[in-house]
Image (cartoon, rainbow, N blue to C red; front, side, top):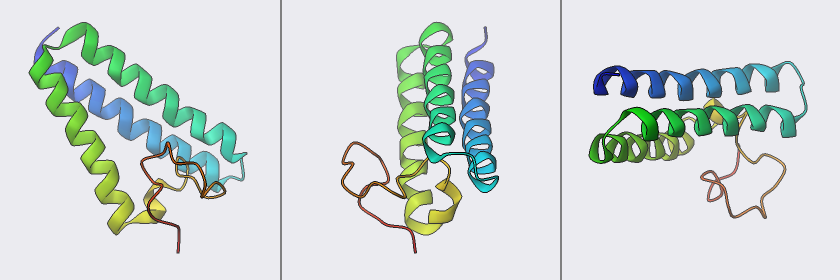
Length: 102
């Protein structure tokens, strides 16, 4: 598979996962379930990168995605409501830990 196509596919999987998790959260699905959608989409995107991309493009894409999540959390915290830790301020293993929802 082409490097660019694999990168775009990985990016779209992550965006679709965040959007689906937010939709599930808005429809009052349990937060523990909507978070799993984010986990699965991140894992699938990582698998795509490992299987179809060279190291440096995959590293750049993964770093960009992590930075994007941090920036979204800083400036638009409600955009990560389906995957963020709204009920677990003590969970330090999350990208969203330093900030709380308004």
